[in-house]
Structure formats: structure tokens, C-alpha cells
Image 1 (cartoon, helix red, strand yellow):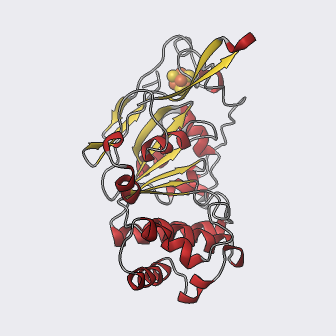
Image 2 (tube, rainbow, N blue to C red; image 1 turned 90 degrees about the vertical axis):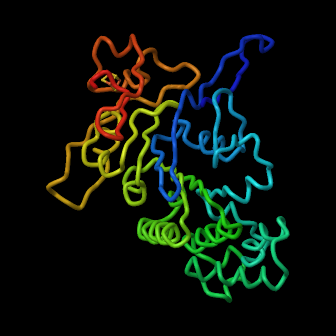
Length: 308
Ligand code: SF4
């Protein structure tokens, strides 16, 4: 699928260009798994997430959820089945609303259960995310960042979704709190048979939670495969560079850092051939001339690079 935005420029806005935010991406996510989407800020991963959620229309291709095109799903039914956790738990929670009311909102909108049943469900959800029943009567500002993200998780669980898109859910948190939220998400996944699309710019975060990992660059997938495989044997030079920047406590696994030169190019004017070639330490003559497509290089692993 693709998502392109038209931008106008020039005198009187007569010149039209297309920003290819997501370009020819093909992904599947199986029930119960976590697909990690990794890449630098601006690589198109959040746009892709919004398209998956049906919050953005797509320019080409299709998105199928549970054997049905996302555009064919009634809006309300889709919102029950798919939920999203956002990066900043403070701005995603209404500061004037009590926690219990925030968690209950989806149940109220969808008229699920009696008032007593909704109150009981809120208590159950507070417990599920490691908060106490009395927390339901407090306001977001009375909580730490980690607790607020727990509230955001409880709110997404209220409607019993099948798929949760987590958009940088721990980026705004301290490292120790990040680990707690990641553990919570994993526990809830096992308990409730949840499916996650987990978006992050940080490969080390993704390594803790993803079953499979897709590495994005300028709106395209550069490498995709089982997380354990990609972290042990990165093949694409971009994945290698991202992984070399990850600190590991194991001194035998430390690798020399591969610096990424220059900025991420503009998706309005992407480089010719392989989009990574201006920054790639392994680029050769063919790279700026022809664009490599994803090819299977090992069972379940696909890489878009002329070295493979
Ligand atoms: Fe680097 Fe060439 Fe591979 Fe692109 S195709 S990642 S430029 S070696």
C-alpha cells in the first residue's frame, strides 16, 4: 500500500509534487504476534500506523483486517476492534477528566453494559494494568508518566480490541519505567491474546517486545524478519547502522558504531535508486541507479539491498 500527499508550490501554487510518506509497503501481522516497526523520525512509520487504523485514507493498495478491507468496516465496529496507544500519555489524557471516566469513555460511547457493569469493568481494568481501585477517582496530573501510560493502556483495553497499535508508547518515559510498561504490554498480550503493531525509533526497545521486525526508511521497508534473527544477524546496512548504536550489557556482543552520515532525505525528493545510498557506507555503482526490491535471503527474512 502507499500513502502520498500532494503539496503545491511555486507562484500561485501551480506546481504539484507528491510526498511519498509510505511507498509500496506490504506487511502481514498474525494474531497474537507483535510486529515492530522501526526507523528514524520521518520515515513514515506513524503514517503507516494511521493508515492501518483507518485514520488516514490510502493512495494505493489495500489494508485488510480480519479478511475484510478496512474501508468496508463500519467506523464504530473498527474502533472497537483496533485501538491505539500514543507516545505522550499526558497529552493523550483529558486533564479535567477523572481516570475512571477516561477508562470508561469507550464503554459509554458504545453503550456497553449497564452503569454498574461499566463501573466494575473500570475496576477490573485498573487492576489489569497494575493500578489500585481508588486511582479511578483521581486526575491525570496526580500520576507519574508511567502510571499515566498504564491508564492509557487500560483505556485501550476497555473495548476488548484485537489489534493495538502502539505508537512510540515508551519514548517519553525514563528507561526503568520503559521496562515496566514493556513487561506490562507483554503480560497483557499473553493473557488477552492481543496483537500489537509496535512503532519505535529505538531498536533496543523493539528488541524487548517484537516477534518480527520491519525496518523502514523513507516510506519503504528495508528489511523484515524474525526479531531474534535481525538482532543477531542484521543484513541491510541501515539495520546494521541502527543496531550498532544500541548499547548492550554483554561486552562480547559490542560492535563498532557505524555512523550514519547526513540527514534523512526529504520524501518529496527521494534519492534515485536505493533510497539509502547517499548515507550507505557500502554503496557501489549500481545503488544510485536501480532500486532494490525486497528479496528473501533466509527463511522469513527479506532484505532490499543489492548486496543480497
Ligand atoms: Fe547500501 Fe547499495 Fe545496499 Fe542500498 S543497495 S543499502 S546503497 S549497498
